[in-house]
Length: 243
Image (cartoon, rainbow, N blue to C red; front, side, top):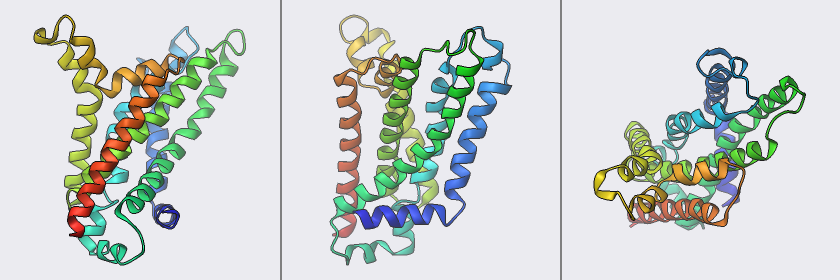
């Protein structure tokens, strides 16, 4: 598993992929936080990073599938998956190694945004007038969100050898898991006792909860369960290719 992790990280940084992913994420978030008037922190009378954590899921919905689409689809396309199977590695070790490599890259894209926190901290009136607890909770939520989207992207990549198809499928699944349950819960057929239950099935509900700065076990368990489920489905898909 460690060898797969190192191989993936080396592959990322030996190409432009890692730098492009990190660069695009920072440029887009920077534009929304500091340049665009409708979302710029400078045009608000409130010191916070709410805009960052609101737009990050939308950016990740496209950026993370772009990272994960090559994970297994490229192996299928080039025939190197057969070489992986000849090594003393199980399908779960291969998947978990690739998962943590992709998640690591997503976290690397998030970490430089800490400079935004430092900037808002300094610009606050008075200095330091920012809800640090909420910011920490939001970052933790963003890390879990990235992990969930990576696991979803891994499943999409395990289902096809076409990277574009893997990308589109991952975008669709990320959207469905994050936002669709919010929309479904608002349908009239779910009004009453079941609308709250339907909403809780989606990633968005638990991401918002953690972003408030209150880390509850049910939200953490939800994200871990999402990651485990999609990784399990990916392992099943990979094993089917093996046989």
